[in-house]
Image 1 (cartoon, rainbow, N blue to C red):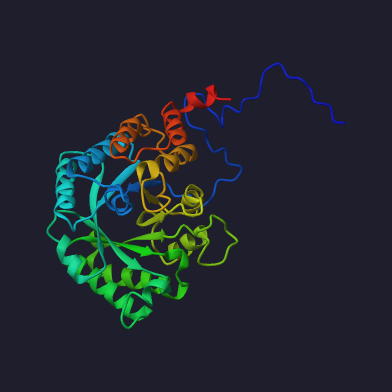
Image 2 (image 1 turned 180 degrees about the vertical axis):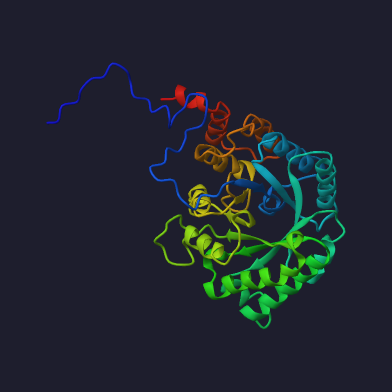
Length: 347
């Protein structure tokens, strides 16, 4: 039997588990594809409401203010997207835009369906960028259109992109159901959008959001298209799309949401889209506080971290809406606000 020797001091791995910070990644081999910067974008006012979170104008503004207080000067959350179809949603957006013009750190953007009609709706709202729903899987392109098919779907989306560009806005294409989408549609469509936007220069440079709409993506390299999240990220980047222009938007149906987010970042994706405390459709969106905890461990936001104590007020707000955080999760969220100290105190 191999002898285990006593040592005078305990080995507590302080590089990996510093006392005053979240646990850190100690790389044996840092991924060459890791982006220089990584951050998050927020969708409570869109996907959160779509998932059944009822918001009055006052509540919507409170959530925006809390996410601004959470991110502070860290750059952890850069944008938040809003619905525009109801008067109350436009009022939330207007209040957020007023705050952003006054120095708030989170830029309001909008979400529309990729149609000329919706493109006309956002042109005069005062935003600089809009998301556009562009369903990418054959489940959608064959059954949402009459007659169905890929080419008709692409034509409809590209007409809307042209209208958005013509209105002076930057388009962000949300490739819905990407993890069930054929390579033969998704990649040529990305190419077509880039080509269409090229004459508009930097102001019109498109962004793309890879949506794991059904939560079916996998964080593994050796999995075939379309389920490998890092594989899809790499193929889109190989088209010439920059990491800063690519977002990943997952759901948690198969309980891999944070793992898939980290796989996307390590493959070169610059932004993760989700919600604080994970509010969203079905099993929820990516919980941005959990993603950011890991990004902090990767070495992002070294100069200034987001203020996790602001999550307590957000949890109380959700409690008042009848959408409270489960007790076990609430305990976890409270522990996270203690940063590294919490990890040194727990067994």
